Length: 120
Image 1 (cartoon, rainbow, N blue to C red):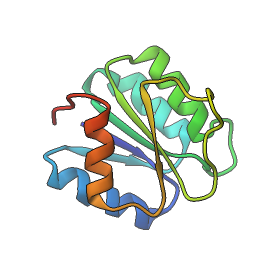
Image 2: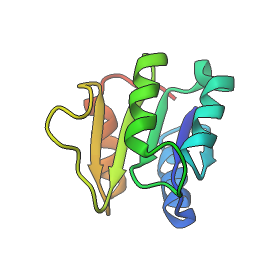
Image 3: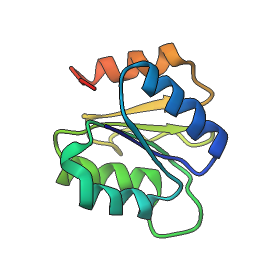
């Protein structure tokens, strides 16, 4: 299963189509808090997390969510995406990839491939 945490519904739908074409079952949420709740209940089923950096006002940014996920669910491949903010050097663990928006399906597949074998 792939989990998408993205506040923009159009980006969520685009990512859902990309990941479904790759063979994933996809679950979408609009906030970091919803993503964390989903992980707490279904984290063992999730293989991929793709999260936006800037989420609606709340406690968790995409960077925060990615770091928590990397620490608690080490089997999940994580991609952080943003069109406005880039991670500073050393701000993300090595097992988290960054993807600049806008992105293509090919860039998503390539980024996931660089994280290692991820199977739907």
